[in-house]
Image 1: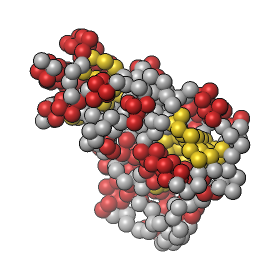
Image 2: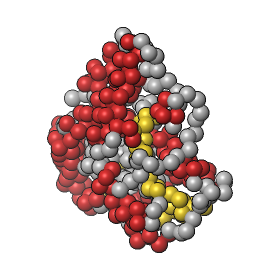
Image 3: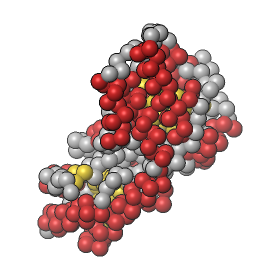
Image 4: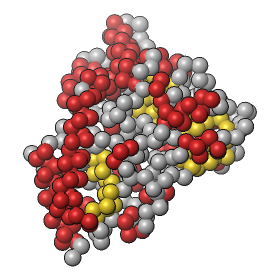
Amino acid sequence: MKHPVYLDYNATTPVDPEVAEEMIPFIKSYFGNPSSSYSIGRSNKEAVENARGQVARLINCQPEEIYFTSCATESNNLAIKGIAWANKNIGRHIITSSIEHPAVYQICKYLSTQGFDITYLPVDKYGRVDPTDVENAIRKDTVLITIMHANNEVGTMQPVEEIGAIAKENRIIFHTDAAQSVGKIEVDVEKLGVDLLTIAGHKLYAPKGIGALYIRKGVQIENLMHGANQEKGIRPGTENVIHIVGLGKACEIALRDFNQNQRNMRFSRDRLLNGLVFQLGSKVHVNGSLENCLPNTLSVAFENVSAHALASVISSEVLISTGSACHSGETTISLVLQSMNLDFRTAAATVRISTGKKTTEEEVDFAVEVITNVVKKLSI
């Protein structure tokens, strides 16, 4: 067992060994520009298109509906700003939720300075949006609904399929940030009814610095970058072949091993929670609902314990997060926990523990022991 035990897979994942192996030839040998007409260029172009198909199969869409980006943040910017700018003469109203990742929330805040009106929907105590609220928020000038598939902090899964049906009925474009859900739960764009969907490579065992955006055929979007015709002009620039290959392989593995990985993530998450409850009893408070939650995610508060103190003390043995990784150093309560109406003491005591597809029983039991011992000391 490696030390420290890593239990922050919602922040990032290690590169899968099979993914790394797939990338090596494109690091060492296949350096050609995919836009070139000669063989080493064509081989890279073929690799990019193969990866496009691998990503498409994971989310049940057509390969030509996949556009490669540098990360989920870029995909979200392209989706939300792209739709906003393309439809600004039709309407300037966007619906989102109060618990979106900053890569969505901050985009919407920016657009509010550019003449757009943003509706931030509330969530219930579990962090879940009510589809009725979505329907009631729709106006004649609504051009986009953007609601995440699953929350990065508490793991709550949103009723995206229901929202998708509402969006379709009202002929409104619907985007979902699926950075946390792809590879953990079923993500089928046809079942979900989404028009755009964001993917993050480093959340599903691909390298950092690669992402993808699904754009349903027929949806018009204004690109943010201008240049040559790569990615059909939507995202110009010479393709990052090495990382694209890695993302494609990671998606292939995620589809191949989906059931096994999901079972292991849920088993390790539940074993962890059961162990903590057995040792600490009523000192453990679970945020959100495990019924509508990512199988690997546990948001939990320990009574009378500072989350930052706990995470710091155990960091040489177990790695967990006190909030989303993008703003884990914040001392203020996250917007997600505020939106769920957690009292300050509970929110300040909240940590996020997220397991991976290879997390072992030994690692879980070790983490339970370490966390239990420190919680008991800190709460004296």
